[in-house]
Length: 366
Length: 230
Image (cartoon, rainbow over the protein chains, first blue to last red):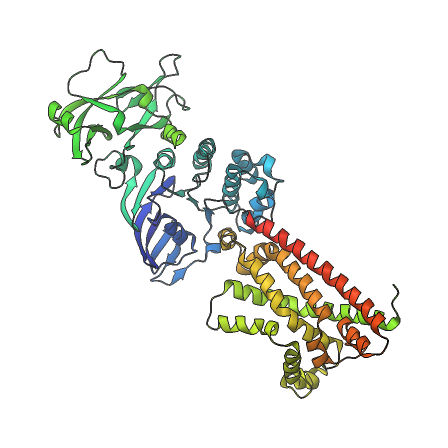
């Protein structure tokens, strides 16, 4: 468990955050620029000292102002990957990679060969940092952090400076790192697409305070999550399990808590769980069994919540068993269909709107 | 162009003085440059003004102040004399001290600028990778500042070769001990018929100075090229 409860004043900016994150998987800190995201990372890596508070990583106390404990950054074993990578310009890629490894006391976790292979660094080892492209630099920075045996990886907007294809490449690598090396990470971003692709847990930051935190699916499927539910690209993240092989013309089948959905494509194999993102704007609500439509995904559920966003749209939360689906409709549709909480409805989703892996398309577009 | 023995002696004395001066000024310049570039403390402006003072003071004044401190009657001079039997006045080491003090401000400035050009977050990155303070200084800061430090060394060497006022005031004009090129030129000009010698020695100092400036410029360019990209 990663536990953070700190406050710090920096000039006229006051930050007071408290959140817990599980010691596995990826926690995204999401917020606009100026919300204090990077400051949180500075507090965790130890470059900034909080006025008050406590940060623990498992049973290791990184800082506890009350007990007078403050581990310096060099003893925290935290892998920090800043936006621009910060490679040492006077060292070749291989020496950059080994910098932390040579200084870390115990060797566990992935080997040098594994990391070089996973990140595709083999051909770069003999180059100087200035000879690398933005994406390559980011990959080396990741490798350098991983080789130092971190107990936590801090990623500060690792994709912000990259173009769309590079973004996809790095996201794919981060996904692999998560699955192969089991190193927990905290990922700071202002991009919803990155959150959808990578995060298991979400911490929403605004004006130096945590306004919501928790499991990503819980936070995304709600009408009242601050920051998120006002976005026009908001949607729901559904947990699915693949049932069939890819048919040539029909895509494949997946299970959603007992209901069937059809998706166009996915990199998963049969039986595997995966996530799909459904933008609320692409979910249609029907009160009677729809007939003669091209839409293949017709899900049954009950309305859990209705919220008028005040911008000419209403966000409707549909409960599909334990999972929830958001749909954005007009106030007129709410009136004419008589949508009320508790009403049994059908949610219609075009197969092509079911986005798997989650956030892939959003990422391409951004 | 041939040089007579006394002329060669002046060239060699100059080189010896400059080399000895570098030996003590370079570590001092690195330390002070680092402190001024990185540390915030009370009296920082005072220290800054103090290390720059030889730049604006007449070198004769620098030499005179050194005499007051390191002279046989001066507090440090007497202590050195009684405890180590070391005298600086009228010696090559004394000339090196005087020349070095005059060169120090420019050297500190050059080193400080190259240190300030280093992104401090690089040191933080090293820190997060487990490098201690001393480790970071030698593995990151010093190598990145090396072009600037070399430029400072070359410039300092050139300044020491040509320093006149402070050297003659503190160390006098002793051939083979403290008579550097500049002092030898001055001496030649004071001697009837010494114009040719003065001209030869002047050409030598100009050549050395020109090379030093070119080298410093080249090293400075390297330094910028290195630090601009991260």
